[in-house]
Image 1 (cartoon, one colour):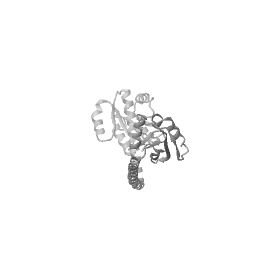
Image 2 (cartoon, helix red, strand yellow; image 1 turned 90 degrees about the vertical axis):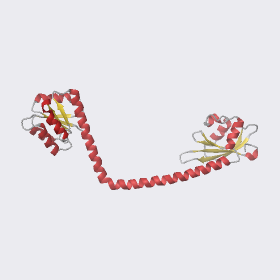
Image 3 (cartoon, rainbow, N blue to C red; image 1 turned 120 degrees about the vertical axis):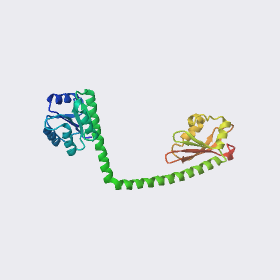
Length: 276
């Protein structure tokens, strides 16, 4: 949108011009006035752009529609409006249908309706400009867009292939994890239990360890959480943790569950008389 919005009102009656200026005084536009077609054309030539031209229909040199035809020819983007009495309505509506003018505002006008009509005309001008700019951009950048689109399609296809591979890897991991003959759990770096294999589920149930919450600090015994906290440095760790009727030998291994998610896997040694 241009920094300045210009509206031109052409009418041979100064009181009409002043009234239009008063009505539009609170709007974000600069109102220019002209008392003749010649003055109006000079304003249009000296100021660019003029988004909206409002012209009286009955003027000495030529009627408003003839004037606005000239405006359309020289400045086709400018939105054109006519002020007139109801006696001229039929001719003006015909001009609207032919696309020579955008809107007919009858005299005497309602101030609010005039404000709305002008603001709508300014929005229409802006939409035309945006559409023209987009069309120019697409024409000049068509080849680049085509190359970009091909690249995006390649990336999407490549990512789909990668996701399919990752899905197969994840499925394989799940099968191996669930088939382990000892209890194992996966805890992510945010402190949530994200996986428990079948042996761990059985042990949790027997040990009456809460599974209602997936947050490890609420689901696991205190010494288990301390053991996990001790792996903050990222090293493997072995230790003894409290169990149902005896301590458990546990091994903690840092793990990456996905590109974004890291954590640890705890495995309990079934060979030492613990879950298995």
